[in-house]
Length: 67
Image 1: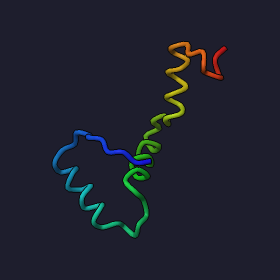
Image 2: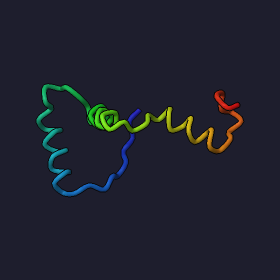
Image 3: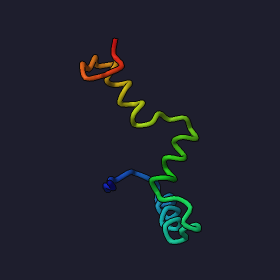
């Protein structure tokens, strides 16, 4: 499922994103795939990892991994 969100970026970045969309770069990656590849490259946690972290932090009783 895709949803639209606003993310503050510099005008130059918008132009690069628009160029990426137009170029299609041999249909190699969608925006979503490209952003996730960058986040993975930087070692940023996945959604599941973040969810697990905050569930443990808050002591969520629905967390299967809690002690």
